[in-house]
Image (cartoon, rainbow, N blue to C red; front, side, top):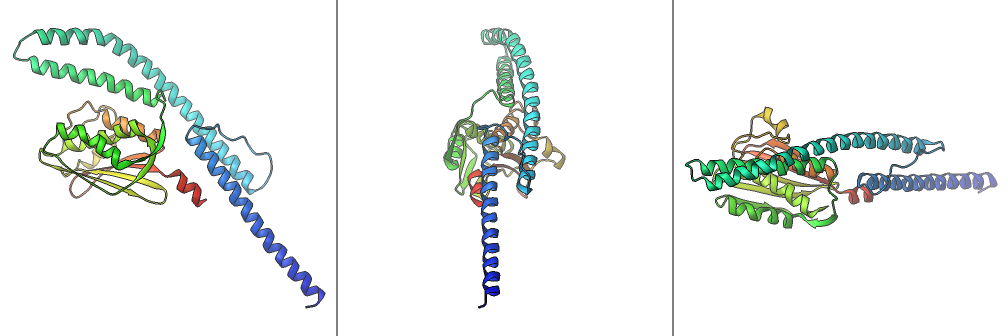
Length: 294
């Protein structure tokens, strides 16, 4: 090889090295940005500061900063609204607790033919007040969640136990395996709410199927009853406050609480009709897998 060929080969090697080095830097910057976004989503860090340098990565980072600023503003506005609602509910509940307690006392002392119905209505009113306060406190960020990696089969079995006493004829079928990073107490409540909803919709000797599965980026928990489903126009309303469908016996707050719990986990709660009945799906992101891929 003459000198020209050696020079060209050297330039080619330098170009290849430069491309690989630039790709390495891009991946490193993307990984750092992904970690910053995860920290922001989990509430462990503030939004990153705008980047003053030029380049494609700087433009992308600035776009992320603007997006996170917008999200923070929306979250603050929602938190203020929720705090105002919670203060209002606290005032109302305080005003109602004393007369409710008095009514319960009088009903228990009164041996009228309607005593059982009166006590049942009072219990529902008390449950409604407690559930509303929990929902608004969740929306206002009034509870601190403790995240850990948990076997979801354990949570399903824990949530299932009290329902086996309330609905002795219901058969539960649990399949699959999955672990998720979540708050044990709140995720157990979220699962319990959708299991209870499925039991209430089912026949006394019905069956509720529970499935656990994973993809590269998410964990899915499905609860399917065999009660024929709900009208299509009802599906978007299932997670709204006070909405009740079919044979629901609660106060219409449980599924709304479930949606808020999933939101605090950066997940989703959704519902669809199947050939047999209603299927509710809880989806939790696997942030570690997303970061590893990047």
